[in-house]
Length: 453
Ligand SMILES: Cc1cc2nc3c(=O)[nH]c(=O)nc-3n(C[C@H](O)[C@H](O)[C@H](O)COP(=O)(O)OP(=O)(O)OC[C@H]3O[C@@H](n4cnc5c(N)ncnc54)[C@H](O)[C@@H]3O)c2cc1C
Image (tube, rainbow, N blue to C red; front, top):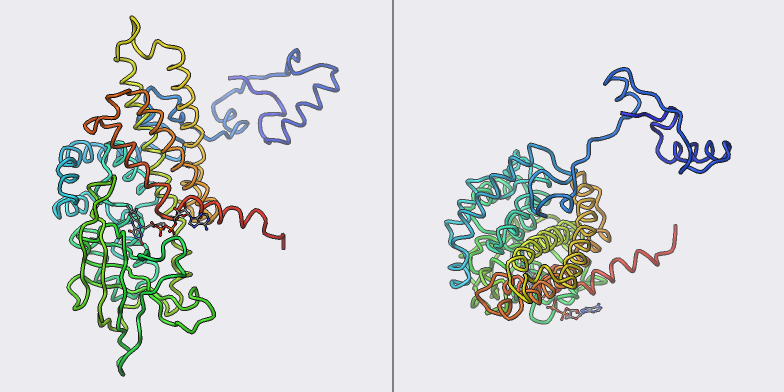
């Protein structure tokens, strides 16, 4: 291997020196014959050139879902991905149509996920989690999307709800809920949205009023669109506890409400356009008596707790969106390569090739940004507005890719039985929930015009 003496390391500084030297020699880099030497040994090479080994990005693999790509992962992750891939393709995928027809998954599926160690995977083992990292969590979410299964709603249970309990729960709450949620015995949900308040969370009306000497709360109100609502055993419920606070943000508290508590009722499984295998429900609270021990975190600090946890939720949605794009692209590539038209296949048409080129490039660019966000979040550095960018960009892209891929499937793409039609329908909600994409732009925009301190 050739090493350019004096320019082998140092990044921008090295490049600057390199250009200056070329200029002083009166030449351009094109015609410049560098002063090169060969390292005597591997050690010398590494001393001169401490370059981190990079893995290829997915766009340089045969297939965008091939294992062994992406520099945020290593060989151990690849092995874990193999087992997750097998599980989702061989165990979950064959049951998915039944789950869609039933409007929910079976209890058994949650327990199987628990046995595999896929629930609470990024949470500390001493707090009832599995003890892995967010990279492991990412693999589970991606492999679910690569198996073309939107259910079960692992993102809600494992990536969203369980971290609230770990981060804000008392030792007693952690002991009670975490092991049961990691094993899939208990299913978790989070209830923020109400019939009259979604994007504007401060407009909620569900109220928890203090009553009696032992500090119990009486909960009244209703929630809507709650994922895992029907199967939920424990729900993080957002309620107003101080209606006199200067704004609702200062008077909101989170509660852990359990299935079976008197006055807690589940409504119907809502009939949605897509995500048919998710159980999405209305929840009603009529004078539900909650002991003081059911407060999750600090009284009247619920809004801040939500704001702290939302970046992970948004990144999780971006991860599933990017993975869905990769799956749709590969599905469509395979289709156009076998679909006969005009004496050849669709893929032999230049306009089709250009469309595939556009799709692949857009997905590859998004992948690069999302991987950067995953790496940042894995070390606790992802900020709120970057997570919002990831959510908005990846879910918008998912919708564009779904539209283009369905188009390339022609009339067959519009049939309910083709896989791409479900991707198209499922993609639609991604830009609405988890904070509508317009709200993401609000959050990003505010930081852009914030006066410098
Ligand atoms: C399938 C599904 C699952 C869900 N799961 C859950 C769950 O588990 N838990 C939970 O709490 N909630 C859940 N939700 C609710 C979801 O988070 C809300 O639907 C979402 O936040 C939008 O709120 P909204 O529906 O009240 O729309 P609204 O707040 O009424 O907004 C309607 C539209 O107006 C636009 N808009 C709103 N505000 C602004 C603004 N400031 N600037 C510009 N445009 C704006 C946006 O386009 C938005 O989509 C789920 C929803 C669906 C559909």
